[in-house]
Length: 153
Image 1 (spheres, rainbow, N blue to C red):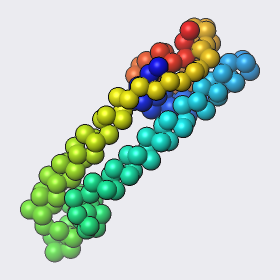
Image 2: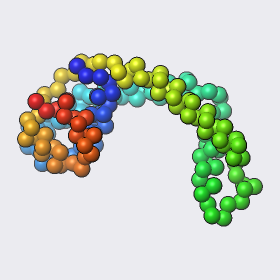
Image 3: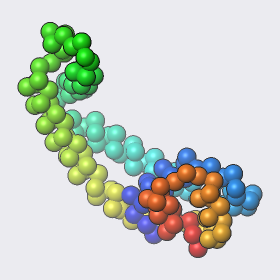
Image 4: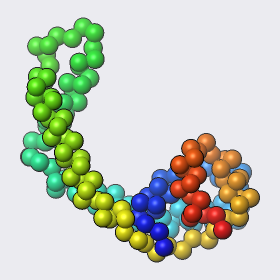
C-alpha cells in the first residue's frame, strides 16, 4: 500500500528510465512495475485536468492567460513598444493574483486524491539490480528515493 502521490513520483521517474545495465529478468520487472503504476498515474492526471477545467474562475480565463503569457514574453524584449502590449501592468498583476488563487484551489482539490492509499503489487529488485538501474540513469536523489520504497526488496 502506498499513496497516490508516491505512485505519481515513481511513475514519472520510471516512465523515463533507461534499463541499459539491467539483466533481462530485471528489465522485465521494471517494465512490469511501470505498467502497474501507469493506470493510477493516468487517472490522477485525468482528474487533475478535469479539476483544472471545472475550477477556472471565468470563461475567459484561458484567453487572459494567453495575454498574460504574451505580456511576459514581450516585456523581456529590449526594444519593447508599450503600445503593443496585450494588457497593461496593472491588469497583468491582477491576473497573476487570480492565477495563483486558481492554482491553490486546484491543488487543494487534488490534495485528498494525492494522499489516497492505493494497493499495488510490484515484484521488487535486489539492491544490486536497483544500483544497476540507478547507474543506467542520471537521477536526482529525490527520484531515487521515490523508487526505493517501491522497487527495492
